[in-house]
Every structure is written in C-alpha cells, then in structure tokens.
Length: 218
Image (cartoon, rainbow, N blue to C red; front, side):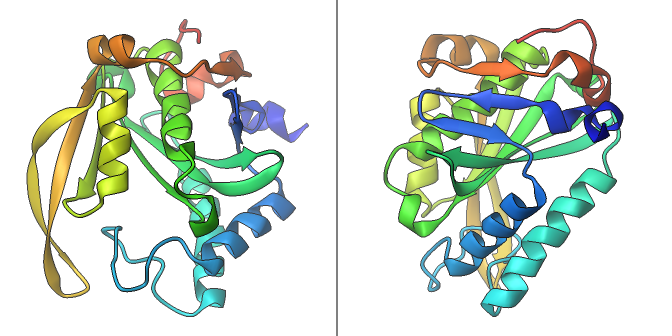
C-alpha cells in the first residue's frame, strides 16, 4: 500500500470538531476550489507570498502544485506537512507545520488558511492546537514559532489564546509595499499552561523516522 512507502499518508489528527490529514486526490481538488473561492478580502494580503492573487483557476492550480511539491521535497531534516482540515466531512482549510533539523533545534513553525465562509467560528484556534499537540506531545518540540502581519487581528487572536509571546518584528515587502510582520514564539511550558483542546493523534509511530525523530509518542 502507498502508506507503507510514505507513512504521513496514514497520520490523522482529530479534535472535537475537526479532522486533519493529508487529502485524497478529490479532496485536494476540493481544497483547491475552496482557495479559489476566496481566503481573504482582496484589498489586503495576509501572506508573505501573495499566492491568492490571480484568477481563480491559477489559485486552484497553485494549491495543487504546492501540495505535491512539498511532499516531493520531504526529507527527515527538512519537511513541511500541510494537512487538509475537515469540519463535518467538509474541506474548510489547510494547516501546515514545518520542521528543519528538528532533532537538533526542537523547533517547528506553523501556517494556515481557512476558506472565507468558514472563518469566525473558532476553527483556526482548534486546527493550530492540533498541530501544536503533534509537535510538543508527539515530536518532542520545545518551541513553536509563527508570525502574522500587524493588521492580521484574527491570527494574533489565535496566537494569544494558545499562549504565544511576542518575538520581535520583521519589515517585509508585499505587493510592492512595506508591511510589518510580528513574530511570535510558544514554549513548551506556555503550551502546557494554555492547552485546552483535546487532540487525538493516529498513525504517528510509523512517521517518526520521516520527521527526523524517534521514540516519541503523542
């Protein structure tokens, strides 16, 4: 079976409302179509790489190509796991987690998006809580980092709920204009104090070598 050759295909995270896993081909198509239908107000750009700019067909294709590219480039020292998020069986967005030399750095980073019609329901908090549980409880991470532009109030609200602390700023150029990115950092101790979302992880043991760690359990 394919999962025997690429174990992350069997990884599944569940929370009270959500399921996060790698998508089947038709689910990837649904994710692409969701992105093409809108992720944010077109007058603003919340992403450092403005991948949502462009005609809907190009946005959809970029989601598919990015998904394949990340899986193809995976190594135990440098990986990105972009999980499709399901709510009631419906594709609602994507939650990513990245590790580089995790066995040494014990640090991960995260990024995510939700379709416009699924925003404002607390799903962003729940899906990030799921991958933080994977990182801290399952992979032995000590810190998780994230970032959002200063005017991305929804992302900052999620980070505050989960215990992140400010970690400096970066000046960025997006769409030819200056934006300020506020970096955020979550320690294991802060995660343990703020964890409130129950998370179940299935299929992790077979994946541990691919994450570059061993002997850890969620």
